[in-house]
Amino acid sequence: MIVGSGKFQYRVNADWARLPGGWSFKEVGGSVSTATTTSMCSIAATTR
Amino acid sequence: MMIFDRDGTFLRSWGEGQYPRAHGVHMAPDDTMFLTDDGGHFVRQVTLDGKVLLELGVPGKPAPYMSGEPFHRCTHTALSPQGDIYVSDGYGNSRVHKYSPDGKLLMSWGEPGTGEGEFNIVHNICCDADGWVYVADRENHRVQVFDGKGKYETQWQNLHRPCGLCMPYAHKPIFYVGEVGPAAAVSRDIPNLGPRVNIVDHQGKLIGRFGDTPAGTELGKFLAPHGLAVDSRGDVYVGEMSWTGWPQIFPDTPRPAHIRCLQKFEKVG
Image (cartoon, rainbow over all chains, first blue to last red):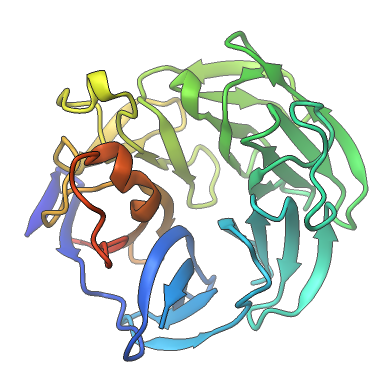
């Protein structure tokens, strides 16, 4: 699925984050990517 | 804190039990992070593996509500070009605080209200390479812009409940703004108010947008976009406070055990 328009079009990936078995996000308050852009961090509460 | 590689593979987590209500995160140029915990009333500068380098505020001990003293449910941080630390504060104050890089309080500004330099939920904050400070003044439906001494410059009023504010660091940057969507029952189903992500230039002019409204769990829709990040490819990560938002959005539907709260938007072209 593509969203947006013009220079800002994106393919939606809702299943990007692959969590360990039995884990799930509760909420994701913030996110950042590192300067080297090799990883991405999320603040989250989890249930196991 | 949960850490993934670019492909979404989970790498590690840390900080469990140490952050009562993890709310905001900012990545510094030196690859340290500034974590803002509104439940714990503190800001911590940490390494990528969670070692605490600096702590602002007293965990578990808020300043009096709306006293203007740091902190009462602080929300987010930004860094000046010189490394000074701005803290948005937040849910229980209407204030921006500025600290030196070693944690000395330099100044604060802001009062409750709707005028210039006044705030109604100071929710996110950014600072560009020229030192301009951008404040998501959520419940006043605007972003206010200040110089580094807290002097009001201008405001963008073409937003509805701007919540997440993300700025790839630059001179005259663009901004990704998460509008959290209507909160009042009377406006919940009004189209074209969010929740969605707006992309605006450094003067607040709308240059892009995604997220069909009203709120929903369908692909490409949002419940409560809250914390945004953009990587070097231009891919956008949108974290949502879906658990908190659900009862407001769907008051007659029981909250599911699991609700989607993270989507990646991969730049096309």
